[in-house]
Image (cartoon, rainbow, N blue to C red; front, top):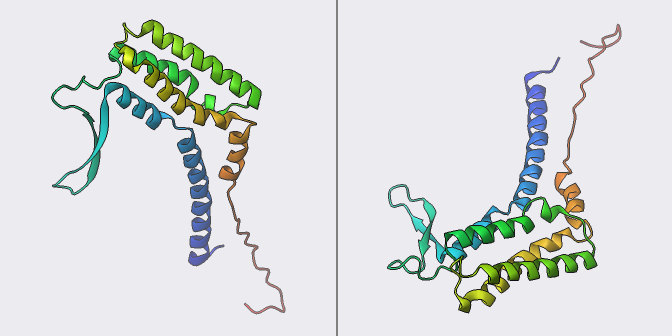
Length: 189
């Protein structure tokens, strides 16, 4: 039977082992989370910015979304509500946790990127008036979205993203084995 100190050590080792595993899962979830980038794109399309403020009562900092022009919140919007949602839907098909885990070659990656660029540009140009996108912002919008989507999709090259999970998930576990004491005629008790 374990004494109190030994029992405490076994519990601590079990906790550390479980905790390390949850840290690995959290790291993977963080790497696959595309929500912050999608939120930043939405704010860009709305003409908003993130501002950090401090609550004087609690002294805590928090983020708020504020229009770039407070007198006229839609002044710097790149697209109307329908356009923003359509653009975000298009981007989400390419930029999501499943897509960035793919396994592609250099050639298929470039081919995919070219296809997406052409299709995205066509969608924007065909719908620009319905989506409230000014002609002067078309190239800017297409180039901006392509620059955002291009780099994360490189994670699909040569299965490197999935291979990197092995290191993230590797945890060190230790087990303590306690053998019961054998008492014999010649041992001291």
